[in-house]
Every structure is written in C-alpha cells, then in structure tokens.
Image (tube, rainbow, N blue to C red; front, side):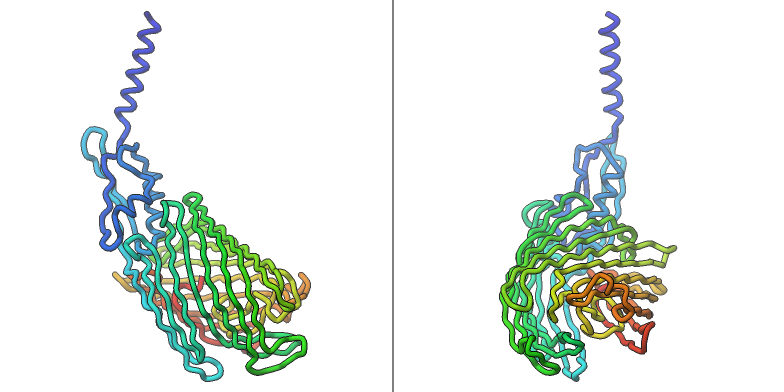
Length: 419
C-alpha cells in the first residue's frame, strides 16, 4: 500500500512540475516587409508548443542577423495565461537591391567602368541574384545566383558564369611582361549547413584560361599566346561564431579553402592550392571595433610565372599597387582599429588606422623565402568608412596606405569592409 501511495505522489509531483514549465503558445515575427515570414519561421529552431528556452531564442536571433535582408533583430517574451507565453521576434530589414557601379583610371590612363545590379533577397527568401558588365578596355561580364536554403533549411546551391578580361603582369627571370588575361568559367556549388556554426561549400568549376602577350620582356621559355582548359574541384569549410550588431562585429571566424585544379600544359599542370583565413573581431567600448585577419596559404611550388598568390592592393596590402608580384605561398596579417564618430538613424561614419604585413614564397622557391627581407612587405595607413545602415553591405571605404620599407604609397577604394 505504501509503495502505491509513493508512486502516486511521484506521478503527481512530475505532473505538477510539467504543468509549471513555460510553454510557447505562438512565435510571431514582426518587421518583415519584403522577406517572407514563412521563410524566416522555417529557419527558426523555436516552435509553438516547445518549452520556453531563452538560449535557443537568442541563437535564432543571431541566425537572423546573418541574413542579407536583416540589419538587426531582437526578441521579446510576453506572458499570455497560465504557463503559456508568446515569443515576438522583431527584425529591421535591409534594402537589398544594390547597384554595382565603379569608375577608375588605370596606370596606362585607360578609363574604366563597371555597372551591375544585385538583389540579395530575391523572392523574399534571401536568394542572391545579379550580374555586372565591366569595360577596362576589354569587355567583361558575370552572372551569379546563390540560394543557401533552396532545397531545405540546411541545403542549397550556387551557380555562376563569368567571362573576365584584364591586363595583368607576369613575372619571370627578374623581369615582367603584360598579358591580356581571359578567364571564361562556369561554376556549380552545393551549400550545406552542418549546424549553427559550421558550413560546407563544395563543387566544381570548368574554365578556360587564355593569355596573350601585349608588351614587356619576352623569353623563349614563356609563350606569347596560351590557352588551356581546366577543371577546378573546390571545398570550403566555414566556422563562424560572430555576434552582429549593425556594423559592429565581435567574435571569431575561420574559412578553409581547398582547391584542386587539373589541366594539361607545359606551364601549369595539375596543382593544389589551399589557404585559411582566420578572423577575430573585438568590440572596444560602444563605438570601437578591433578587426584582424590572418591568411596562410600554400600551393604546388612550380617555377612558373602563373603563380596563384598575388600581391595586390585590393587583396592583402593597401598601398602596394595592382598585382606587383606573385608567389606559390603567402602569409598575410591585417589588423585595424575602426572607430565610429558619427552614427545616426541610417548613416554611420568610421575612421580607421591599419597595419598590413605580408611575405611570399617565390615560384619554385623555399620555405625560408618567407624570412627574406626582399619578400616581406610592411604597410600602414588610415582610412574612412561611409556606412548606410539600411542597405545590405553598403560600406564605401577609402584607405591611404604607405610602405614602412620604401616610398611606395597609394589610395585604395572599395565597397564593403576590407575584411
């Protein structure tokens, strides 16, 4: 009899505890205009009928902040009745139809321009679609589509086609020559979200590269015309643990790139290229942000002027110039302090001070190339950022960098933060 009474008491106790659990009655999303609410709810872990868990809600809010269509997100829990609660998630939407417009003059006084448009919230589902046309003396165009959640919450794809032409320098035997470079590529990638912090990107790209001699040094060993078909197999692994607050970032991110390229020619046969970008961001007070990027990369070490790692203004060292050298391995560290000195409803203006340092392994060289003075570069400088807080990735940047080794210096303009 005692055992029956104890069992009944235990059951009643469990029922009492369960009845005291806070249950989600409804999840509401507010503030969505273009973005489909059904799409947003499909991304959330929090559902009606679940036990109220603030940690899970905060994770969902962080996920929404990563979307191109969302500039900011927050949540509120409202008591309904008994042990029932409503969860309200509010979002502030970005404007996501972005023109791509640029004008510049190259070193040979060639006036160049680029015009295009991208929608980063196509169909209200955060698909990215768009393209551009560029004329820098040669015609270039590209078309891109990216849908991370096309098939399910975790699985999507990306597709791109590009016909790129540019005048590029090649370096060999202590000399250089300018070539017309043409890359015609078609790429198909799968996108898979392992979990909240981890993502895989994998796929294949078929492309044709053409080089045509324009001017500069020549060598019997280097062709004046080259055409080669290649296949590139790509795998990217992304780990992201970042906290977003408008244009401020806090936390760590890592992206590992692995590529295997097959081709048949005497100047660049099959080769492997791999590099890892490590990012670390730290909030400094209310208006400061310390940003860091470390890139370590290696490729097959062939003695060829077509080495894959370039030393360039827009990639790694601000102020160094446009493709001033190439290598088969590189180590680059960029650090900058960003301070917001104007921040209103839609516009923020940042000033920044930066330090960029990098070193390269020469084609066919040795690991100790990294430690040779002639292969290392040191640049520092200051810049400005004009940020539209209501438009996705609408950051116009101006940097002025100068060498700490010699007198080289220059301005670097671009869209988006440098890293």
